[in-house]
Image 1 (spheres, rainbow, N blue to C red):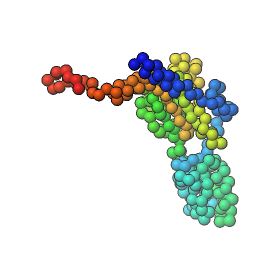
Image 2: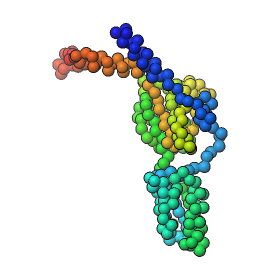
Image 3: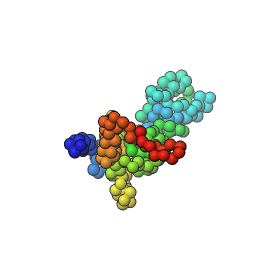
Image 4: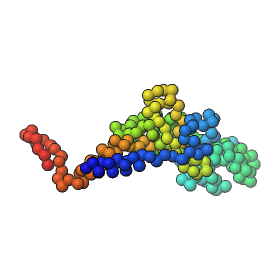
Length: 235
């Protein structure tokens, strides 16, 4: 049994030793609010835009961006909208409708932002996808997910983000330090499609390992119950 416990501790220690690789675009140690500037909002599938033709109001419509990132409009067909700003789409539509309208005065106005989603998983009470209501941080995301479980490791919460070039980067955030000292709670705002993952603590891993090992190794089930008469029984 001592040998088994030692082997399990080594395995668990190896699982906990994985650390993210720093990047010049996503530094692990210094990552906070980046440059402090708000980035232009890029539309994504699921968002809805209002297309307003000031010179031809009969063409006005609200359109939801399709899963492939496109908009379909009369006379000009398909226009790519994903990963573009409303101003970029507006400029393309003005040019596209120049041959159809005498005065192609077009406005593109975002009216719904259904692509604003984040994912919270691991040792939280209600993991899954949730709406990104604004500039929330990883701690607020965990609170939205019901808070940590008893087996959580809040000092090594992983934040995964897809960078503009397609690279997936990870930073480790010590949320426990921010809870203990508000001066250390300067967490960076989340972006849509971010993944916040709360790992399981080493103690919780060991408890789970031992529980599963004993249940599979022993030939009988030692669960206990009371019968209706109040007698204590085992099975």
